[in-house]
Length: 351
Image 1: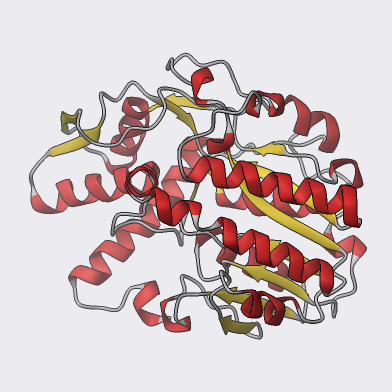
Image 2: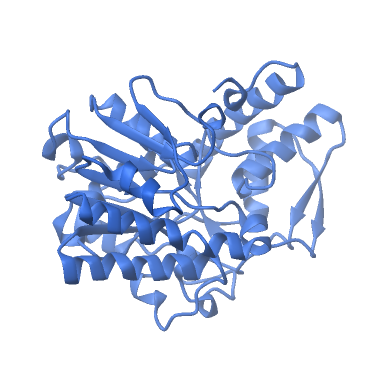
């Protein structure tokens, strides 16, 4: 069930010189997706992000890189010129601290999808992917750490997370209507907490796995054997490793059964934040004194992915064990941390 199924993918459906456009390519998931397609031999990839190119998380040799602000219609038209497939991962977002504090900026990301999907349709794009989020789900169903897994229908009646969640839900609707009214094949994946190497690990936009890895590394390095946890540590989540994420995007995008149909893309391995800390402590070989900041952003009490639908349609689901993914993530962040401390350029500094 969890092996790579014999399903249509870009590699089986597209010519290697078809133009693939990836927005948000200067970020974590977009950068990983760009590398994924490049490693499959695609020779025409256009990577787009509003960050200056030297600040991109990853730069892939042979890829056309454009610095464009996709909140502007003209930029979206430039991005979509000649494209066969568009993967829209561009958004102003981060971890829970960012999402809760900058709701206006998160809401303004609706401009990106509004202009991108119109530009893609006008350019004659064949397939259009939109990266949605589990934040689109009804928050009233996520008030208990022992939450039942969220299935796709749980987005309605709508009560999404303020700001970021509502932007995702509205953008999903745009994708559905462009298919219904204009015939553009759109695909929608609701991401559940993606993590892994090459992701944000400091600065305020990082998510829980990276933040906890960094805090444990700092505690070991400074000798202050303590860690501050946001909330009381009982809140629960599932976390999806980046390799599963990009593989899932590819299969979802090329499954006609999923046209204009939101689908969960996430692990179903539920853990509490306290358990997440314990796993990272085991990887690091330390035991820290825990302090809890009850004033910090904590998000919903519990959230998990119901993978019944993705197993039914694709015969696959994200399956990288959390312990395995965190090991790779911790080692990568540790290297970044000590490179920075030694005055060596980190990956992002070098790009």
